[in-house]
Image (cartoon, rainbow, N blue to C red; front, side, top):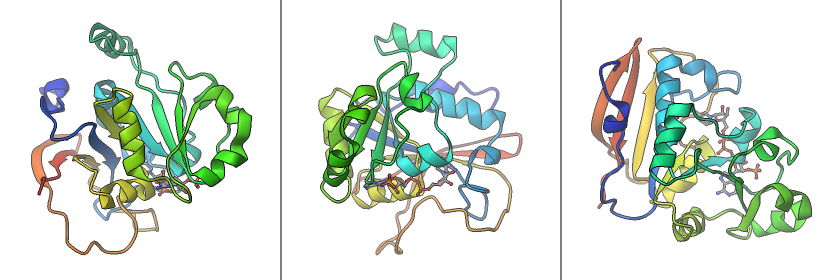
Amino acid sequence: MSAVDLFEAYALPARAVRTPFVRCNMVSTLDGATSVQGRSGPLGGPADRRVFHVLRSLADVVLVGAGTVRSERYGPARLDDDLRVRRISEGRSPVPPIAVVTGSGDLDWRASFFTDAEVRPLVFVAGAARRRIGERAQRVANVVVAGEERVDPRLVLEHLGRAGHRSVLLEGGPTLNSAVLRAGLLDELCLTMPPRLVAGDGPRLVTGPELARPLELEIVHLLEEDGLLFFRLAVPRS
Ligand SMILES: NC(=O)c1ccc[n+]([C@@H]2O[C@H](COP(=O)([O-])OP(=O)(O)OC[C@H]3O[C@@H](n4cnc5c(N)ncnc54)[C@H](OP(=O)(O)O)[C@@H]3O)[C@@H](O)[C@H]2O)c1
């Protein structure tokens, strides 16, 4: 992969079938675990970090579930200078905003994820949680109600599209991936696969009951570095 121009390899489609285009980026072991001891960091490596940052730099907005923000102790988006300069030259913010999906509103509003963010985060909440989180959240984030009991991913993407975002980078976790996939909103999966078995009970890429029809993805590319495989997979449009 070292000889590959990652910006070319991961370039977003010039004409997406629909807007915003939703690309999911995940790491999974050969036996399907997306975390060990509750964290995904140990599964990747330097090459995975490179791809992670390139994908963030290409995205208009990052979308993530509250479980991942809590378990991975998400910080504010940071990009190296060259990636920032590239975004600025394209008329975009130096880093993409991060949008969090929560049903409970159980987030630490004093965490650096909110207080040190260069671009104000968005929080998509279910209506019930909106009443509970009150003013604290509003001071550090743009809070949007997108559903009553659960957050409806369709409403999330409609909101992001109306805000002018043409590409969404979904960074998991499995519960949010599942909601987006089952709503038929996923366009692409970028999957890093280390050649490793871990067993245990780390969640798979998507949760919930078996799909009525398996989803067959198309390989756009398959790269390798340090034994890690990097799949770019397209979800075919029916
Ligand atoms: N390998 C990887 O690339 C990768 C990437 C990301 C995460 N992970 C791993 O995944 C694990 C976390 O899994 P997870 O499934 O809990 O992650 P998640 O999808 O990030 O979080 C689940 C939580 O997000 C909120 N949420 C998601 N969809 C929602 C919806 N439609 N409506 C309302 N709320 C919604 C809920 O938050 P509330 O509880 O606040 O209501 C829910 O409890 C961690 O161990 C993490 O390390 C791995």
